[in-house]
Length: 159
Image 1 (cartoon, rainbow, N blue to C red):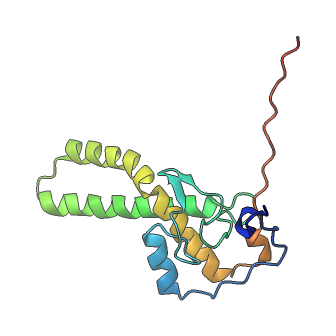
Image 2: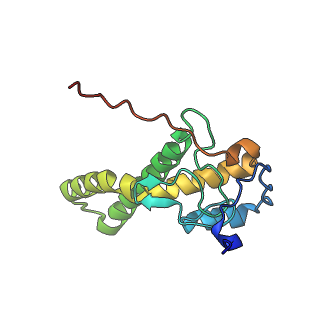
């Protein structure tokens, strides 16, 4: 009795990945705002709220794009978004309560908001930065290589 062809393992492909068509800026940023891969629109690209997948589950592009300190750009996007919201909320609070603003309430309310907002905006800062980066630097073959991580050293117990 022979084995069914679908029971056999498929050989690993050594062909280079087919380059994705470059999305327009609007498409890339729309995908990023939906927390999808800006390159293909696939996803989800987050394992948890604060944990990014190493690669897109649909197209396989590396989401860290292989440079040391790559996500500093995403942190910058997060910082600018939080500061912009701070300025807007501060201006709105002053406008709403003028001529006698409650300074203590504004101070404490905005301080609490500034602690929470970076965590709330974290996923969008990553996908928006990736969209910007993909538009400035289109994907190349190394962006589709599987990420390599060294195994952690586990101390062995002697017997």
